[in-house]
Amino acid sequence: MNCIVVDIGNTNIKVGLSRSGRITRVARLPVGTRNRDNIDEALNAALGKTRIEGAVMSSVVPARTGVWRTRIKKLIGHHPLLVEHGVKLGLRISHSKPASLGGDRLANASGACARYGAPVIVADFGSALTFDAVARKCDYMGGVIAPGLPLMTEYLSERTALLPQVRWAGPCGTVGASTAGAIRIGARIGYRGIVREIVQHLCEDHRLRGASLCATGGYAKLALSDLDMPFHHDPHITLFGLSHIFELNVVNTESS
Image 1 (cartoon, one colour):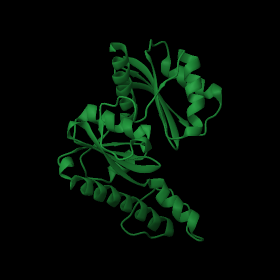
Image 2 (cartoon, one colour):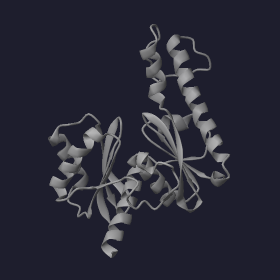
Image 3 (tube, one colour):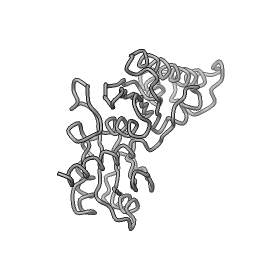
Image 4 (cartoon, one colour):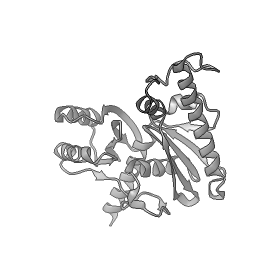
């Protein structure tokens, strides 16, 4: 089953094509993209000449949702499936307020459960650092939200008079020999500690013992290079999860 997949995040919009669950032709656009020609170009590049059954999208930026739904409808003739807690996810949701869950987090959990089995913990290293926990029998429990890596340096610069804006991707020594070096160590090593402590905390729950670990998001590669934990680095797990949810719902509709 082939479909267009779109994930509208806080920083970037990812567009791709799912061919029976294999994610291809992935493009990234800044979340501020409003030009319809740019949106149409990205959608057409993903589609190519492939025959598709439809489209699916998640969005955590309501101001961008409408224009993408409209452009997708113009391209394929109908609106995309918008992922939220009320659609078929392949999960049982134990979260107390499922309507508050972003479609990207639901896609992460659904995709990771389908690909790696349960229990599983998905860490999404984006503008925010989110963890989503899925117990056995694909029972979505909830998760953890922490500041993302760029926020750890940006906040210091924004809220202090003398501390500079620092590139987190630069050299990271043992001791900071400069202000920039000291900030970078605090961000990078502190970030590593956040990840390690949160995963350890989650795994103290008996329902998550022995859980597989899945990492995705734009900063995952950098974070995992410093982290000796058995994460599966899966850059497209969100898009795969969207395609999995699309298939669950299309099959369900066609068979009913």
